[in-house]
Length: 127
Image (cartoon, rainbow, N blue to C red; front, side, top):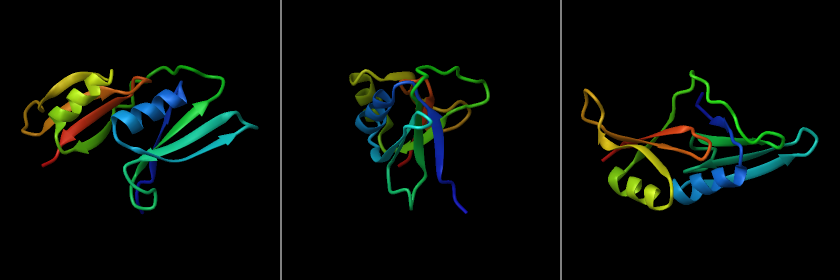
């Protein structure tokens, strides 16, 4: 068994695809529309779905915003140079709401950013 994907509902599919591909460096792997039930799915990730866990962005055509529940926390992404990435994200208009630095009580260097829908993304520097 392995983890296949995490699904996020998004209010603006193109803005989300642009954020994850242009700012976070993922690739759009596939996209499909279901006209009968009025939704579009976009699968994005850093590698092929057969080898890596990816994100499924679900856009329901009649909904442009969602309430963030208090149960979901964040997704986490390993990065090589957290300081350079956070600077790049900010330069492209992204929201780095927790600047890079050591995690409280530890030595791992982390930062937090938000995607266009407000989902939290933890960046963890791996060297």
